[in-house]
Length: 190
Image (cartoon, rainbow, N blue to C red):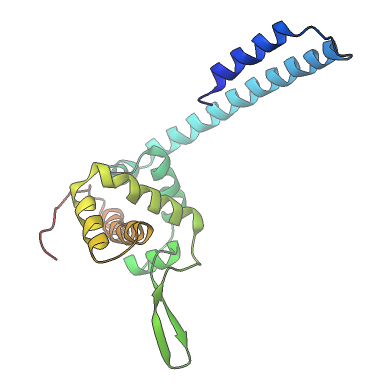
């Protein structure tokens, strides 16, 4: 998409310079113009559907609560609303398990070999929470401080972002439960 204007100009320039006429060029141009018209119609329908979805999200009472959290926009809040609201979670740990961001222990018999990321859970929600946590690194000092602390503990980037997503999920659960807006707190020390 970024190169579309440049490529379009180059294509038309190459077509103008073309000296050989290929059989069926006229019918191909009719087909291409027909496909282009269909594509314009589909894009218009897509943007109309997107606007309807955004209007529905804006109308939801918890939308403003969710969007008060840094790194959460309209599309992210729409996904969170569709995946979380209406389901009954006892606590934030159950929600984290549902989302697939709660760490899982490796067990074999009586030995426990440490924890790793879960491969289960709601993939769409997990992805949204990860991307939201990543976006919050620039927008929120508390998120950045937590991420830096996890990196200093030896966690790789994805592990630190996933740990941040888990922490933010605890906050999100409390926000949804209580209906309160996000308050940033930069923790010192622990």
